[in-house]
Image (cartoon, rainbow, N blue to C red):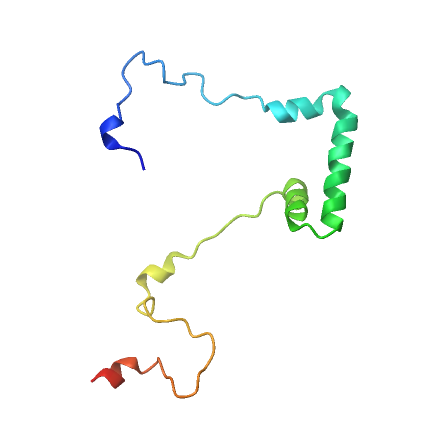
Length: 107
């Protein structure tokens, strides 16, 4: 975490401000799209395909993300209002243990 004593707000004319924003070019993409790089691109794709066929899940993920697009991630926020959120998750039963009636055992 940043040390708040060292934080300084931007002032007018501050050289740290990026007025042009994020660059519109993607250097690696531009490099790979260059006609002279077609052989390099083919080698990279062949290597990635061999890794994916060999079972490398990161290579599989890389290929599917590029072909299909990254999958959207959804989060379920309903847990915050759930009264059971602090109870342990029941994975399997152990004979003699009953967490469902925990409040009754304490009285």
